[in-house]
Length: 179
Figure 1 (cartoon, rainbow, N blue to C red):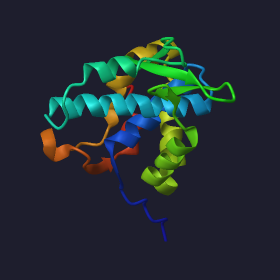
Figure 2 (cartoon, rainbow, N blue to C red):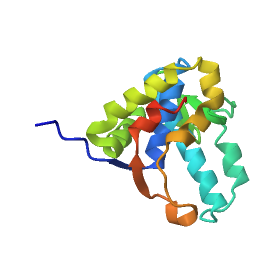
Figure 3 (spheres, helix red, strand yellow):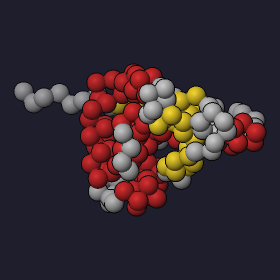
Figure 4 (cartoon, one colour):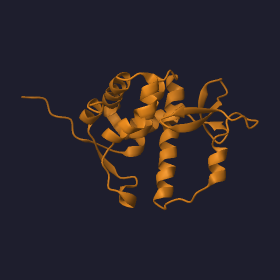
């Protein structure tokens, strides 16, 4: 009897972008904890922009400026990832992490979020993304990475109907994204 095929993986776009951005950040040389927080920040930035575009949130330019602040004292520190400037700050143990305001994000909470979103398929999805990421030089990957994500992200309805909707993530599309 042939092995049973895996059921389709239904997930919303935010964890897919979070994981992809984290994989890209690792390919750029960031440690895994840093990469997880950078991935979450990229996805959060994209979600806020989409919410504003759909009229689900108001523009807050002052909040956007403050999000670029890093370490206490107002020093601006940022990492460029997938076309976005991500504010970073040092944790108490000296690790550089994406910052929310002046506080570093928690890599453990991002890891837990991804584990919940992908379940037992997280390793499979990560492996496909890592293979895709390794197919390009790091700088090129950072430059075209968001367009690659657009090739494999789940297809959700346009507009408000697609906000937060889950759809099938076709892992084969990740493997074929460079074609």
